[in-house]
Amino acid sequence: MGLVNCCKKRSPIIIKNLDIENLSNTNIKRVNNKDDMNKNNNNILIVNDDDNNIRSDSIANAEKQFNEDTNSIKIGLDNIGATCYMNATLQSLSNTKSLNNYFLHNYKYDKNDEKKKLSNEFYLVIKNLWKKKKNGKSYSPNKFKETISQMNPLFEGVQANDSKDLINFLIGQMHEELNIIQEDNFNNNNNEDNNISMSNIQTDPKQLFELFFKNYQKNFNSIISETFYGITQTETICHNCRVVKYNYEIMYFLEFPLEQVNIYFGKTPVQVNYQMQQPDIDIYDCFKYYQKGELMTKDNAIYCDLCHITCDAFYISKLYKPPKYLILILNRGKGNIYQCNVNFPEILNLSPYVIGKEANTMFDLYAVICHFGPSSMGGHFIAYCRNALNDKWYCYNDSTVTLCQEKNYLTGVPYILFYQVIDVA
Image 1 (cartoon, rainbow, N blue to C red):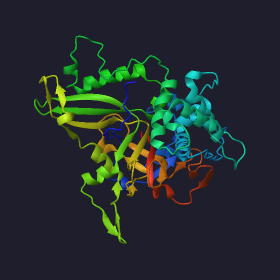
Image 2: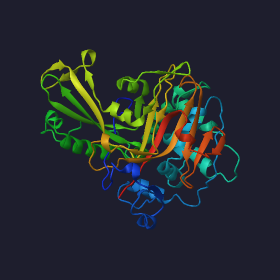
Image 3: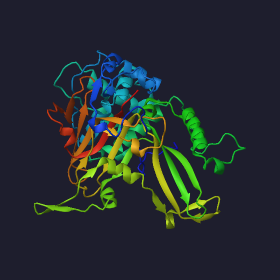
């Protein structure tokens, strides 16, 4: 499909009319409409208002329909054989507001439509989680599990699996099924004007982005791309001619290798109660790590079409435009899990790390997938999610759903973080 799922290095966009330096001293408050907003002029507001000029029409229209006919009952998902990874993922995506609204109010379900096989099953899960009338009973996602097993052998059988792999598959596959533009003509370097040299365009980031974005709009139009797709800018600097070449790519999550982050910052294990303990990591250190760049040499050297030889180069990747719903994966390794605490805020400020000029950089935490166990391919997954209707946090542990009395979601073992953009006027 010509898109990148950002397992490579990425970094994160810019908000106006906001005193970032004094953010810690600012009162942060959630409001539901513009009348409430007018009463809170001195606050940073997390506005649950859909009539704004920042969100796309498709998301805004979907969120307007998040109304009283949606049941706020909390429904768990049965574990049908090592499916806690799947249940935690589904609950987190279910609490992704634009996705929830689209499938509850705008999705056209047709059980005979084989082209939307996965989307149909996802719709049935969402419907049963949010429109079930009787409290206390969980839902069994047998058909959903059967469908993903048929479509991807990674999810066959009852072996343990990983929430990250499922997110990657669901976002990619459902976008293909729901994309209004069915012909896939997307090419990062597509140049419709043959009189313009791509070599010249790649040294002009503004001209290249205009070409990229025009091409992007012609090829991507689904609720998935509207919700989860962001854009990264890469810079490749040839060590021989020193020319900087730019490129733009699509991403739908950022992945941070925690052990490498600590190594980069020179943090070493410390002894606590006769045991070696890994130092804590701050989520902002992860973004600093990803914007540091890397040397491309030896087998990774690049061919420079200006020098006409293979050269060492310096490669930097930055987030140009983040998605409206940002997914951060805290990679602790596949084998022995890298055990460390990760400090992350409820309000995420990405303005120091982003280069896009007309985009939001403030994000609000709404879901956390936690993992317990020695390996990401085993152990147990649970999800903490903030309910979009009552603004309360719940713990989703397979079929059991409990109200969070304290901020448990900030003190667990985070593996995947879900943030939604805060629209600041």
